[in-house]
Image 1 (tube, one colour):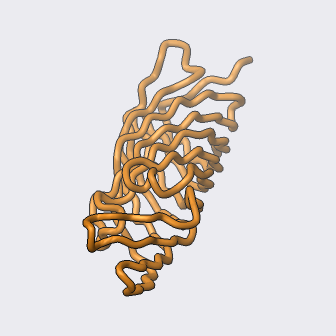
Image 2: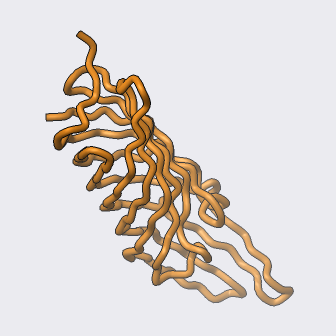
Image 3: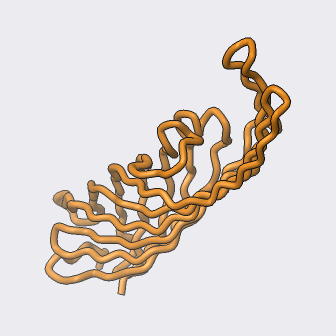
Length: 190
């Protein structure tokens, strides 16, 4: 007997995920892509999926020193530490059920609270400034998961989400932190 999804009851589960995190915008100019590690709980109920998760990314800089020239009189360089992001997030999604019930697609939105940690050193026109940024930002965006049922209790997901900062109290990255994440998750359903 082949496993298939049951949609008439709650299907709680826990999952582990590894994602490729591609920084975009200003963040993408300064930092290399990184792997994102995530652990979460997930509940599927009829046509809705809810999740709560904790994830971590560590972005390394593309180069050791960044030089800038704004005007003839305003120039200098910036050195930066790795960018560490730790997020707690929640999401909800609508479950699309194909005819064969061996895989599903869920499309939804998420909201995350992210701890941002980075040390910056500015030197411009002879003045020096060291700035340690440790802040919390609120982000969100769309997500799409494609889920494959392997056994009655084991689920494999291909995860995709666009992350964008909605509220941030720092202007280091101009428009905030944004990235595209794509990866794979293994879920155990109870």
